[in-house]
Image (cartoon, rainbow, N blue to C red; front, top):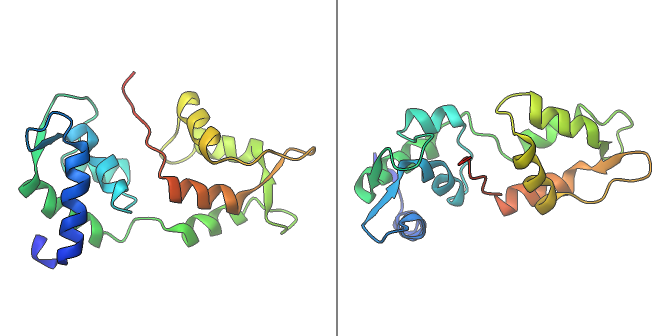
Length: 160
């Protein structure tokens, strides 16, 4: 499975893995699996991260690099990852005037009530890092928001 990866992809995976190896033990916490994959420009769902061995609590499980590479290769092949164009098409559904804007309230609702929901703290972090100011009528340009979000890959720490 990991044989499908190019040398440059393996090098990037090693670098990202080393970043998430907080203790320098050659292992990452399975809790950080999703963030490590996102740092490699993948967009796995929370469900997929769980299937690949990710955990919802820190300290439950560790992953070695030789275990991480096949996970990276498998997630890289997954078809159910969204890309910028897919997400843009979804947000266009809220663009009633077809002018590249949507109501900020609709975006907030979508992010907190649909799919893999964000809580208020997570929403604040995403908006702080990626959101342009809304206009006087409550509209925001959604394309720059999406671009910033995908470029920044905002890391959300689910530890409460």
